[in-house]
Image 1 (cartoon, rainbow, N blue to C red):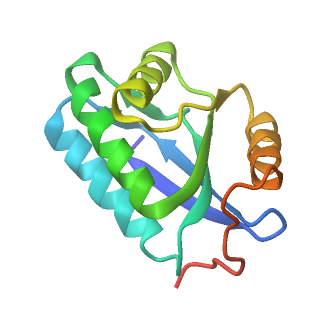
Image 2 (spheres, rainbow, N blue to C red; image 1 turned 45 degrees about the horizontal axis):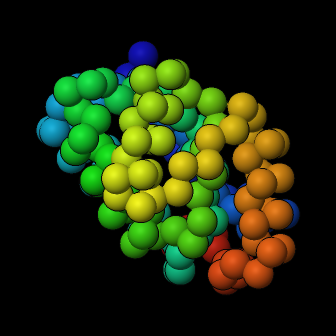
Length: 138
């Protein structure tokens, strides 16, 4: 299988879901590629999005963990209002949690997309920033 990522807009819930396939981050070059591709996808939306991230298929190795944490925090602050994650292997979830603490990025990891979506909708309803609807990619 080859490295692949998709970003699909869910009009019903006004949320984008990121899905990864064989995106294995071994070093800073892999992280740079990941960031470039993620920014390429997210920059197509006219405003910041609410994002669900499927961690299955995204593997962060120990040798890329610190750089990934910093880069992910910057990408999320630039392109998202809120982000919630689901799935993933234990090492990747550990780097997401650790980098969240270090860099002040959201952690929010759930078992399934449905759980992550429910948590996002609760957060949205609690008065957090509202997304601008109609976020189809340009």
